[in-house]
Structure formats: C-alpha cells, structure tokens
Amino acid sequence: MPDHDDLRQRLTALTRDLMLIPSTEARPAERQRIMAFIANHLEALEAVTLHRYESNGYTSLVALPQGVSEPDMLLCGHVDVVEHPHIEAYGSSIVDGRIVGPGAGDMKGAVAILLELFRHWHTHHAGASLGLAITSDEERGGADGVQYLINTVGLRCKRAIVPDGGSLNDLTIEEKGVLHVKLKATGKAAHAARPWLADNALQRLTHAVSRVSDHFGKLAPAQVSADGDHWFPTCSLSIMRTSNATINRVPDEAEAILDLRFPPPRTVHSVIDELTRLVGPLIVIEPLMTAEPTHLDPDPVFCQVTEQVTGRPVRLVKASGGSDARFMRLAGIPVNLSRPLVGNLHAQDEWIDIGSMVSYYRLCDAYLGRKLGGLEGVNRAAKD
Image (cartoon, rainbow, N blue to C red; front, side, top):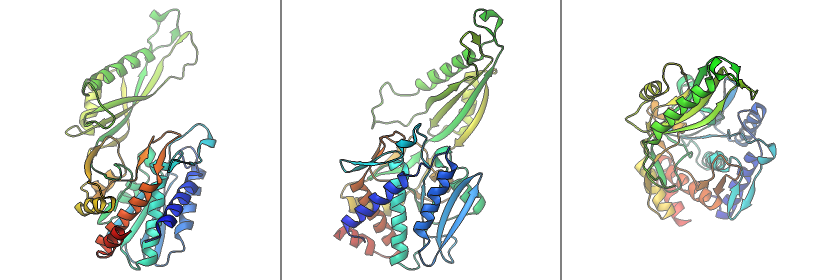
C-alpha cells in the first residue's frame, strides 16, 4: 500500500484535477474531456483492456483485465456533476482538511480513490479479477451510463463497490424508489383584467401541485431531524414554469416538475396511480425518470473490514437518494455502497474530508485483499 502521506497527496491532487473540469449536463465537450483525462490515467496499465461506449452522447469507460469479461469485483463511479450558473465555481480549495468545491463529494473524490485503487491493484497484483466502470450521466438518471452498460453492453460482475451513498461507517442497505414526473396543464388565455374569459392553466396546475404536496406532507412525522428516521414518502416541487411572460395575460399552459421518493411497499406504478387521483383528469402526467425501491445486499465481509480499518462499528442505513446501484441489483449483482465523509452535496461549497478518503482507500484495499488476494490486504491495513 502507498505511504500515508503520499496517498493523501495523490488522492488530493487527482480529485482537484478532476474538479477543474466542469463535466455537467450542459457541457458535453467537458464530459468528453474528463473521460479523455481518465483514459490517459489508465492506458499505461499492462494486461488491462479499456473499452469506450457511447449512448445518446454520454460516454462510459470500462477497464477490465485482459481476457476477463465478468470480473469478481467491479469498482463503479460517475464523473458528471450538477449545474452551477457560473463557470468560475468549478474549482476547489483546501479548508480544514477538506477539499471544497462542486463535485468534491458527489463524486470526484470517490472516483479518484477508485482510479488509484485500480491502478495499484493492476500494478502490484497481476491478474487480479478487478474491473472499473466510469460513467457520465448519473445525475440525470443513469439510463445512458450504468443502465446501458448492464442492459445493452451486458456488463456483469460478481459484486460491485459503488461509493455514491452512505458514509464511511454507514453502509447503505436500502434505497428509496424515485419518480421524476412532469405535470402539464392547458387552458385558455385572456386579458388578466377579464379572468372570467380565461381558463387559467397556471392556477389549475398550482392547485393540483398543492393537493399533491399536502397529501405527501401528511405522510411525514411532525418533526424530522437531519439524522432522524426518513423512511417515508416525500414529494418536492423542483420546477414550475409557463411560457407566458406578460403580467396582464392569463396563461394557457403551464408545467411543473416533481421529485418523489418512496420506500416499499409503494412502487412506481402505485405512486403514479396515487398522483393521478390527486391531480385529477385535467392534468397530464409524464414520467421523466423512474426507479423502484432497491435492496443492495452488501457483503458482510465489507462491514467487517470497515470496522477493522476504521476502528468504529458499521451502521446499516436506508437512503433517501438513489444511485446507479439499482441497475446492478436488477441484474442480480450485490453492491457495497458507502463512501468517505462528505457534505453540502450539490452546493458550491460541497466538500469531502481528505483523511476519510485515505481511510476509504485503505478499507477498500483491505476488502479486495480478502476477496481477491487472500488476507494480505487486511493485515497490511491493520499495520498501517
């Protein structure tokens, strides 16, 4: 294993290099640039084949040992990040032992760990059955990334590590289902001084959204703390808009975007039925992205190694957010889902703790040692 200080410096430098590239939905050239950067990072590895895939303008890279199509272990991450209005936001700083900036925690810091792990293992453990998949569309749902790799390319592995949820000692075992949906209303335009001549689409839509919000709001406990039990359905209004730009005109069309999250026994189908009853027949419902609730089936050995390396017990947690792990589970692939300490995700001051990055690297290396190369990894991590 690399020296502690050297590893810390390598992970920090690589994360900050990745963060400088604004690989967002609206910047396809930058998504291509970050994939080229990662390919350059991997191409020198001997006995590793690098595969490049494209789906609807989104690139995925899959690195596999030569002659291996289904590795025992697959490391999986994404390099796309959320949009911020100013390009100057896509940089980083070091503050109190943290890397701060867009993409630090979700998930370029974790991708840096995966790249360094993959390089280390294929440099020092020839023939290791370890693969790597990096995608560029997770923030928009993953259909052209991991879902494409699983369903179209046929990528498979015996087990995967996806550091895109949980925390250093929080291992995710369940993820809520997800429904991103557009609600559309139409009506009749008129002068705002004569509303009786109009059919106000925006007002109809507002009332429908209010009914949905009230309904789901009643499903939550009276008070929910930041680290409290959140295993209940939620509905967030994220966008409402109309093409009308005139103050004294009643709009004849409007639309809203809702983000719904739900645990079992609710399903995508049952939540759409729920919405249909709530909004009424005059609102059109258009699902944009769907995902069923997911059980991840983490490896008990991963829990054991995490406790050994960190010196703290593991908590098995349930997640409000979703990840690309759901596509793997649909293919029967068990997933270990945890990550370093992160915070303020999707904000400009998003952060990842550097010391926890080193710890996460060590526990993953130790786990790979147990699964792919005997007990050396755990013994080595315990000594360090």
